[in-house]
Image 1: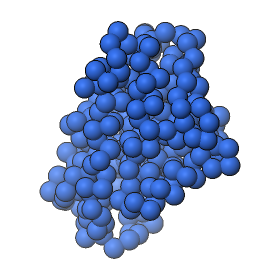
Image 2: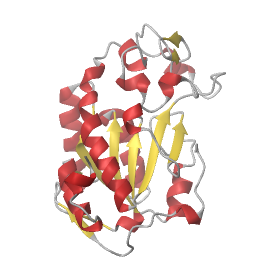
Image 3: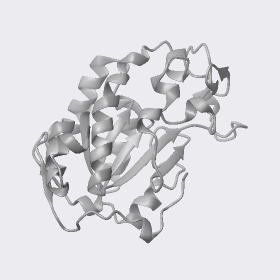
Length: 250
């Protein structure tokens, strides 16, 4: 579904009031699975595959693809544990009425938003390239938020979905680390959400941006949140599963 808040019957079936702990920076992150959502930000063909918007900006899309396998494991385990799962997609209406001119014309891209590329019109809702990659495709019952900006809260139902689900903590993954991930984490922090960023499940086209962006999240005692490797999160979820986390995620 898209930009719609699930009804209470869609709530996760995982155990309530069962605090779990992840070894993280700057210190351990504790969360209740019943009030925690896994958020996958913009894992779209236009950003991760050749011929999309990311490549049109001159980027090497292979830099982002290292996130796919660890994120597949996290997604499978989160589903098995009954966590709320939310996907986001950046994109615009076909008539571009929600696209500011400043965003359209900025940069030196060979293809701009709305132009026709190998995967359809670049970053236009409903086009093949704007959709989520096959490896991480949403399943029935998972919310998909279409967003016109960098952050997940701007001009979307994301905040409403979180409130209706009673979510207080976010486990944040996706691309790119310094842009849409960072914007969403900062917006969430201002709204009182506790955010854990999984360092190997977020990616940047620029290795130095990746390193610095993660440092910024955890700096000054966790000014925006926590950072941990995905295996630490899988280990924390293991008690909720009937089999070890590594097996459930394979």
